[in-house]
Amino acid sequence: MGRLFGTDGVRGVANADLTAELALGLSVAAAHVLAEAGTFEGHRPKAVVGRDPRASGEFLEAAVVAGLASAGVDVLKVGVLPTPAVAHLTGVLGADLGVMLSASHNAMPDNGIKFFARGGHKLADELEDRIEAVYREHSTGAPWDRPTGSGVGRVGEHLEGLETYVTHLLGVLPNRLDGLTVVLDEAHGAASRVSPAAFERAGARVVTIGAEPDGLNINDGYGSTHLGKLKAAVVEHGADLGIAHDGDADRCLAVDHTGEEVDGDQILAILALAMRERGVLRADTVVATVMSNLGFKLAMEREGIQLVQTAVGDRYVLEEMKEKGFALGGEQSGHVIALDHATTGDGTLTGLLLAARVAASGRSLRELAAVMERLPQVLVNVRDVDRSRVSTSAELAAAVEDAERELGTTGRVLLRPSGTEPLVRVMVEAADIHQAESVAGRLADVVKSALG
Image 1 (cartoon, rainbow, N blue to C red):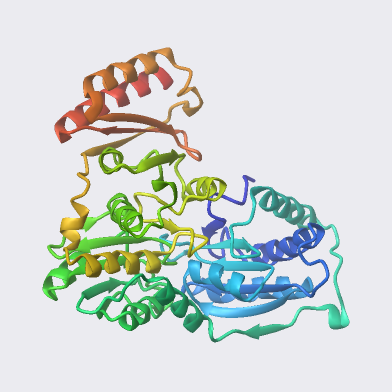
Image 2: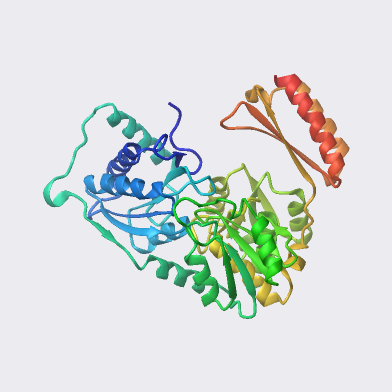
């Protein structure tokens, strides 16, 4: 059995990979590990549990709650809310642990469990490793130390979570959205009530699509991975912009008034300039991954903003931000972290801040997004190769050097071994799409011959 915890919690097909027994066992293990770490010292422990609308979230929530309460943890169920809302409530309610049940942008049959530490921050890797080890130890029959009588956890509901979170979002906005028409695509997901409420109370005229979750339709043809319906709705309603979330609303992509996509790199560029103008972009620095478009890097250099790049994954962006005290970071996929106001990517907050910039500047989103030119980017997955030799192959190094010489300062090459599959990702950017495709194809051939 491989490692249970991935880069974003535990995920799998609900009731096949991610069973009620696994959810219960991990929850009990988490309670014991945090108790051993001294997190519960001197007080009765408390946890916040939320979920997205997936049907499987109903039984998984019951399993998590049972596991925590059986381990002596009091539980507050906050219901269907976005991942960043659960993280926020973990902090403001003074909980020792937060649990979110969601598989984000994955299809409905999947689900996942993500744990938050006190304050709503991602659980440290070493604690995840310890939880997994303790779970495995007890899944083979080792008995738990179980509280009895008044020592068992109590279970209640916290029905004010949506209002608390929306109020927080509105308090962050630098200005209102009066006069804007915004189309919101909620992916039939966790933000289906939160996001429209926040935008309307901020003053926008709101049109919603994909906001009727039934437990089965999450991410089905709607949301940040399916922008077609949002593009059409923005044009149909003559809206100023469109905002798309994924199933748990920790990411945001946008559409301008002409129906053109505005991706995470462009959103980061717009927000970086807005924050610098307000004097809140600490060290005039933004954090992004190595997969960010070269056009983003060139735009930030031109605007005098420093770019710090990390490995792929919003967890690495967040680690860099926390370590160095930076205020803004994110990924091309739309995970944007405004660390002064959120402990994780927050799609609703990102959308609100983007709309606020449009409203305050009097400029269209299309005009604002033109601060950077997206260079053509070609990605080729080369399968069935030895990904471990990417950094040691002399033949591959020579081919990359030739490609970089050809591309010059207006192009870029990135070879990235997959963390889970026997494949290598070849990414090439160039000023011309045909050149990018040509270089990527040649490099893919070399990867196949050198590592196959």
